[in-house]
Image 1 (spheres, rainbow, N blue to C red):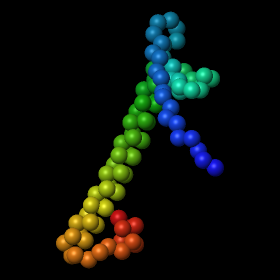
Image 2: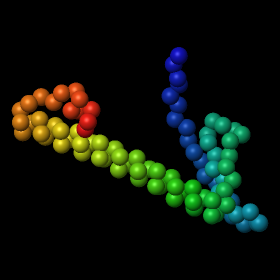
Image 3: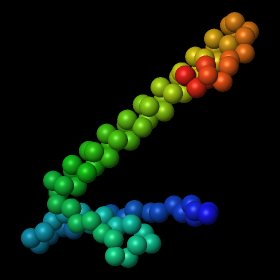
Image 4: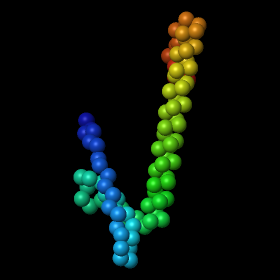
Length: 89
């Protein structure tokens, strides 16, 4: 079974004025899906999103550095790396 790989857009609407100021977060393509966040909730959500994105970037960077180090070791020794050595990186 094949899965469709669709990119979804996220929209933000800032609600100002009145009693309920906040943020409405919508997902394009899903008419009934919307999050209504207070200012405090929006701030906490944004902070969590930034932290998770940072963790993913650090993990990717560390993995890339390990692979690069393994490749450098191979170039210095002239010995090919085995599959298990690459998996450890």
